[in-house]
Image 1 (cartoon, rainbow, N blue to C red):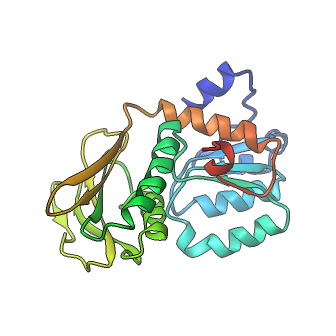
Image 2 (image 1 turned 90 degrees about the horizontal axis):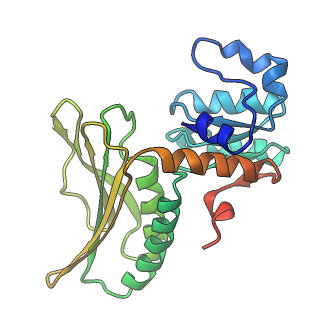
Length: 237
């Protein structure tokens, strides 16, 4: 889908790399790229960054789960002159949802009767839980809501039908529950619940096209910008 959108916007695909042809990173074709779009797995993303940077190619990545072990190294590489556009989600709708999330969190910081929690639902093939998008949204809330010091994984409904974790979490932590079912592209729901009422906001992706378009828009932006870039640079809300 990324390839289809890129071609429709007048771009040229010079290289496509998968598990079967990693040697392509050393090819003249790959080295000729302005930007590489990297959507892989938590365990391979960092190595792909290194290979792309070695080839002098800027990277747009939507891979999640690598920051815990490699964030400091990536920041050092950026400081040395490499360029990475990273986001946990590239959808325009999620960018708007993220802006609403931060604004609502600032308001809700004033009202301690409301406890905040989150549920994210994704397809059964997704490897990480909670999702990178959920973690980003949770970090935004924790930055604004004084009564939440961090996020914590709550109850996880696994693809095989089993349930792990628990909804019983410390009050100072923002609980993220996860559901893995069918081929759901991604649903994120944030709820502020009080004894009197509840306030809920939800982003529900109908398909992956919005993510693919956002990745191509990010690549177009990255081609003419440098450093560590995010959707806050791309979308000015």
